[in-house]
Image (cartoon, rainbow, N blue to C red; front, top):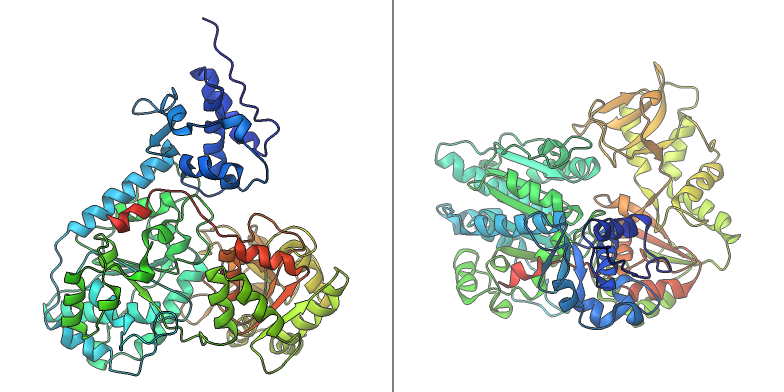
Length: 620
């Protein structure tokens, strides 16, 4: 019988060549008589490329092309009854089928397997028995002295709820805990105190506590290690761990090598695994992590659920923390928390699922005030409150030494050089002075560390890589504005590693600085232990200049002063999550460079809604 040729009308739609080739391959291998099948297969591949775990057929039925980020109609192509049509696809039957239909969600099988693995692993961990440390309340009181707290919901005080203390208590009773919160809310501080609590408990029982610390990128791992080392000094001396494991990348922890396919990580030899910046972890990485952590070990995932999701498919942390603002704690959880922490969570009582009982959201930022400047901008953008962003925009000064938020209303590309050039010279004033001082001299380790520290005082963040307002153009321009060469290796060139290099011990996201050394020009990288690693420039084939970096690359970093540059046109990646992430990289000062205010408003209105089925875990 001659195969039936489906006419899915894909050529005129903004699908990639990979999407259409995948759908055409399925049609040739196992022909379908319904022309919508080939289209649905192509759209599933397309959504995967956009970071979605699946194609949400219910959303597609209600929103049409809007569910795909398209400004056109699909009604004539797809029609109605999509779920019923998908159910008759020849490519979803059988154990090895390339597609999987689960309810109204159509998955590539690889993504479905990863999601199922995460579901089953979480369920297994939550069912594990966990001995609560003796004298838990007493130890928590020692780690969290009473203090005046003002961390209410919507500006209203909640009677002295120390959410860090609550998070520690929850983590002490289970093999899995999610701790989410915005920048400066004390996620690392909480983990250090949890570490002290579990270490003290293990010591009393005469056993060692094996700890593994990790983060998705080398930069985030270094920051985790530095933050933990600093926070150790705040612990009661008798509860201070004698040694702390070095934080490593998830790739190193799980022994993931380049170009691995379907590899399985060995089980970790650890009693406690702490992973920071969990919002950056994609579906497959999370599945692999959960499989590698022994069920008898405790796993703590830290992250800001409102930050940008992983570059690859999935929005795991955001979906697992669904509803965290409301708490969703059962009356049993509320009662238990009251007994060990004296914190009253009655206002957060609900009927959440098992995972919700092990999720804590930290709510009070110590990096910046919630009721002024950067804090107000972050809150308004995160809430999608265009009216409030508009008010803040017109209230913010264009140039001021007093305010912590400055706006530059650039009306044309020609204004870019004068505005950003002067801003870069001011923001990097200390670093540029040190670079001039090093001219004709050889750089010591101490000077290199000082230079790296001064470099991190200011950073230009971009939403895009291409175009006049993108990373590639601005890196070249800023180098020229600061008086540096615009290509090759030169003293003062800051670089970012763009892929893991296990031979050099450098990870994607590590930032170094080219400096004059006794052996010639060398690139100095922090070694994570207070020292410097010097690398020959010719050995670095995976780096790029980093006067400017994308907001995606900035995750896991913080800078004293951030200049956030928006493009002149609205693009799909420009969302409130991207704005929020860029804004909250700043500790003390934020400058917004916006060529077109309408782009800002539309970005605040646009929210990333990645499709997947993990939201249901926290509810069930």
